[in-house]
Length: 284
Image (cartoon, rainbow, N blue to C red; front, side):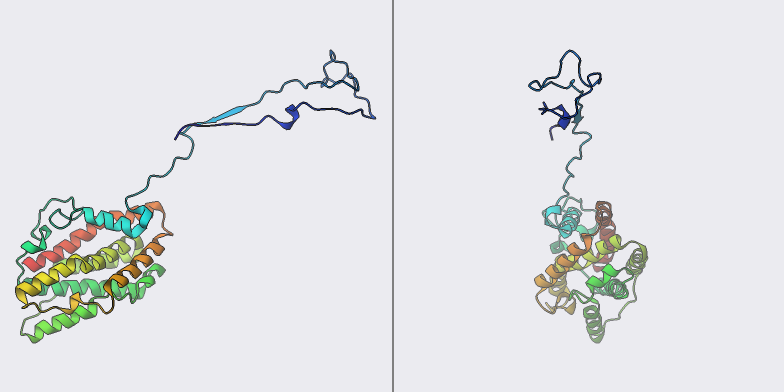
């Protein structure tokens, strides 16, 4: 942006005045009137020129336009999506930038799930969703209540699936370290860091509605004779349910400062770490 030069206008007194005869004669000894210009009815005079100031405001001192963050023009949810996609590997998503370091970071097509591992995944996932939905119901911060009964809730669906496995004769394990650790972390941040909690809320539910469904199809094909579990079913139009939550997330974040939004975005990596630990159970 070019420098902006602002030059103040001369005071009104600097304009050439026109005087009309006055009933009260001017004091000829006044220092305001130059004596070399005798006053007459037909003559006007110029006041001594007064200094005017020019003010120059450089681009460095003027307020510069704030840099836009990727996706910001479409709303904060798009910013969260952009950051999340960058944390995928290229095998998982076109926008991914992360290198493959763990088995679960490969394309789902390459996965070799086990029933025991998948049951551990379901049990730990249920603990996480139980925790998320309990926090939202409790609503320590008023913004949490915006996300009650969104239609994305998974806790009851998971309870139904775990019951089905039990009826098939499978032993149901207790929650393991990845699920317990993540649930405890969610409880902790929900009490004093709403921006961080919202980051985990978004990534958990939205990831399951996308990549999670691919995992469900893979498991159904490999282990369940193509039986589709309740975990991958929603009551109503999923695309509309997701859009409703996007709108709520965008609305809630409107009151956040840029620093608070950045803090939320920075929590994405932590969200991926915890969810990755739980996903890895499927392949154990």
